[in-house]
Amino acid sequence: RIENKMGIKGSPTCELTYKNAKAELCGSRRMGLIKYVMALMNGARLGIAAQSVGVSELAYREALAYARDRKQFGKAIIEFPAVYEMLSVMKAKLDASRSLLYECARFVDMYKVYDDIAKERSLTPEERKESKMYSRQADALTPLAKGMGSEYCNQNAYDCIQIHGGSGFMKDYACERLYRDARITSIYEGTTQLQVVAAIRHVTTGTYLGLINSYLENDVKPELQSIKERIRVMAEVYAKAVETVGKVEDQAYGDFMARRLVEMAGVTVMSCLLMLDAERNDSFRRSAEVYLNLAQAEVTKHAEFINTFAPERVDEYKVM
Ligand SMILES: Cc1cc2nc3c(=O)[nH]c(=O)nc-3n(C[C@H](O)[C@H](O)[C@H](O)COP(=O)(O)OP(=O)(O)OC[C@H]3O[C@@H](n4cnc5c(N)ncnc54)[C@H](O)[C@@H]3O)c2cc1C
Image (cartoon, rainbow, N blue to C red):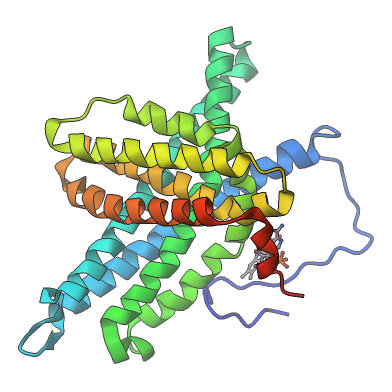
């Protein structure tokens, strides 16, 4: 049957069941799970990251248009700090998730180009090394772009309704549909919790820290220096938190802290990308500043939790 869904109603969904269907082996044996399924999932996850950016963008545009139009207490609601703060945070999350999406897609493009070249001739040792690096970076950024982009998309859809007030709860405005459409992005092609499972090895193996340090090697104009310095401090706090969690040999504790570490890596990477966007184009400056404030608060909050939490206390959270 066609499922009766909360959102994305323009895309019908049904379960497929194969019974005694003839099957043919695709590709090579023993490559199925590691190579083919992982490539399929990463491709699909990048697609959902893009879908999340699209929904986030519309949520921002709808909220902005309504805030300019709606008058309360004699002025447009966009003039209230509580409203313009919501809007600029929405824009910062939108720009951050789009930058991360593009960076991830760039890495995918780069290693795929090498894959294509390798079909024509063998790669030089330097090319093989570079191809491997891009492949690893794509593998690291995909769960971040999907996981964090989809959470931001949900948050932006929520704030879009909030800015519409009571009208947002009615079916008359696009924001109500957006709110329902956003919800699937953090669920299908692997829930956010599963993106954390995919991302955590890049926390422990240092892929994220390596990327952050390479971004920080870039020269930036004087007006972006303070942003760069603040990101450097965030990176240090993140590295320290990874070390603190890594010292404890307890799987449950490691899993319990994983999302915090992945989010710390994610917000630091996105801060770097927005800083570099602002270096290239001044129109990103505001989002870089606003996002950094948010990112710094997130990193501080998670570090505080990690530093003050005794590993044995994980049991306090166990629900049976
Ligand atoms: C509209 C729609 C379209 C879909 N389209 C497709 C499709 O085209 N093809 C397809 O194959 N599938 C499709 N799906 C399935 C979709 O990918 C899964 O529903 C989704 O990946 C979540 O898996 P699940 O429903 O089995 O949830 P579960 O795995 O049962 O998860 C339930 C909860 O447990 C948590 N959880 C589970 N495992 C872990 C873990 N190891 N660590 C931490 N937390 C965990 C999850 O985060 C979640 O909160 C679709 C689903 C929907 C709703």
